[in-house]
Amino acid sequence: MSAVGVGIGGLVAVHSAAWGEFAWPLLWAGAAAAAFTAGGNALNDVYDRETDRVNHPERPLPAGKVSVAAAKSFVVSAFTIAASLAVFASVWAFAIVLVNIALMASYEAALKSRGAPGNLVIAYLVGSLFLFAGASVFRSSIEPLVRTGILAALAFFTTIGREITKDIEDIRGDVDRQTLPHRIGSRRAGLVAAISLFVGVALSLVPLALGVLSLGYAILVVPADGMFIYAALHSAANPARSQRVAKYGMIVALAAFLAGAFV
Image 1: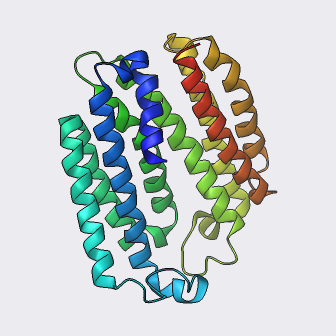
Image 2 (image 1 turned 90 degrees about the horizontal axis):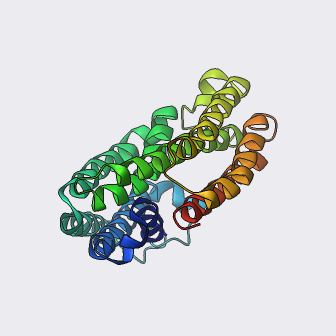
């Protein structure tokens, strides 16, 4: 799915050149994104292995099917492969991978339990997937970076809204995390989530204002924005439904960006 996300970002960034002169950089970038995600997921399993003994005993580490040493070796190998493949895309893509590896390690080691800082890291990592695509095809024109930067910002703010909403939903079970709802209460946290989602809606209008995406985007972004607005208005009162609607809104927004590149 990470590779698919890079592909969508590449299509938004350079349109038909994504399967022309920029095909190879995007292929390298997609493979790098897949390797990075594999390493990140394995790193998460390493850090969560004790809680998984209770919550998910069937997973490879708590079930004893994979040793901790083997899992750690896999993490190092996957991150090394991701960085090596990114070099073939561009130096900027390589730099993003290095930053993301550091952030992923910090998230698992410390930021996950601190709530809001962890939300910010996850939101950046989601958004950076599209920025990564833009960096992979960046040569001289900044237009690909503008297009993917807007998509990355939209993903960043809507992800923050969704992550906070998920924390509101899980407030009773998150006894070992200092989430934003724990710190300021569900109602105020819901307000922060709503503001983040409304910022995402506002950012969705930027491509139309700049004229960087066409009619197809304008048509599909309307239902996406409707979902984000619904999620914003119900983030505190019904967080379970709100975060699901926000997730669907992100999918429709991706389709809108993809349509805007061609229609």
